[in-house]
Image 1 (cartoon, rainbow, N blue to C red):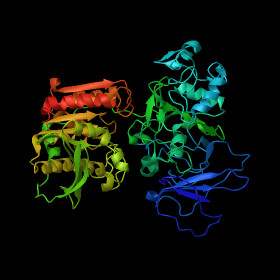
Image 2: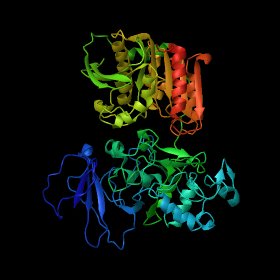
Image 3: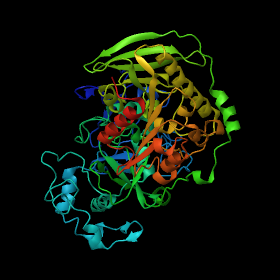
Image 4: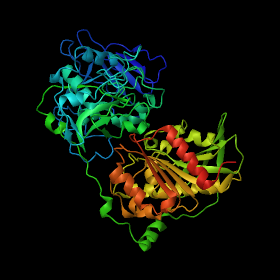
Length: 599
């Protein structure tokens, strides 16, 4: 047996000994294990310290004889992370860790194989060189585009490289970029991925098989070492981001096509990409099967039997809330709801620590009492160096990755904040209840009908207001020029929190929308949006699966109580997140317009 820490800089395997090992003291860190035995295919497993109450105390692994193992694939044999540790042959599994899908019925999968790595450029080159784009036997799925059936000739004309030859979108003359043989193939449509799988004698995984193999329940350990927020795609496996059963890069790197239909002519694509927010590992996405974005890739599965596939491969279409059939509550009832958010403004006791003195800003870590219980709020204040006080200031509410990560020290939100500070404004980033080191059992940003969710929404409002109380104690902050900025989850909360806080003078909502799940009326977004009166800028992607444009984005925009001339909804030809350049331009222009230019 061998081991290595998931964050070891050299990533080398260390010999532990020969099994059975009765006693062994291992460092209390996330660890990857490798088990080797003559005549058997090696097995790799991950052990996550943060889930010590879930992972078994003994490491047990089933090994396949070399002649029975499938090269380059991982044998998925049990239901870890689902209902129990039972065999997949007998234990139905749920879509664990996939918000919004929790109520789908469990499905019996049976054991199966899934690729250890994403399909690489080199592997896909073999498909192309074997005339894969010319052999109809690999292209078994009907070509349907916008409800219209395409002929073979018309469909194949769409699947060409940058020079007009057959191949992925970013290739040239039917060849992948030099030096990228081991990079995941990207720029491929669902149809191309499915055809390659046929060529390889495999299939695209269903979202049930993909999710089970991905270990979404270990997001706090897997995501930080994954290829998110880096310079671009990376060679497969280089990140050492490995799921429980030994599959690499299921978080980040390239998004991965799955088999299932999602409705409206779309297919699921999972795991998130290197240029997307970290929480996309846990959030489903679905796109047109013809789309060939530069970060779209895939891996394959092989099933040991076909009898169990019907349910897992069926379309997975979530029920949607129809906001056109609902009305917000009356003003008198809303006043009663609003009273739940009031608090006593007790005297401030603050602790301030200088955390960073960078070229463009100073970062302070501040703690002060919360407006409930005996808790403390943590907040990070970024003060710009190249402009003069009193500062225009943005208070920031993060995306849902803040729920899964347990440390705010690195502030993964910096990609959404740095331009605000370099642009001359200050930023306050509170650590809201249930996020980062204030984790308290909150698992998801998906609303529900529980009092637990209601109490958290009320706490977030008080955290925001308490943060504004703190800003009012500072002479270097202009209390009349404070904006709210929310990203994704924070964007959705932008339909609630500004309705309760009169000190907010403008809002910028990145990738927002109404959540399509119900919550108790005293925290339901539909009852708050009409009470938001300040200028609001919404920046969205047209192909956002999480907040669809017709059923989520537009209802939010229309119900905002802001006057028509002071609200703006810009929709870009992207998925969940618009491009950084568009976000920077529109955000800074909006803040300058409604808060006045920086000093």
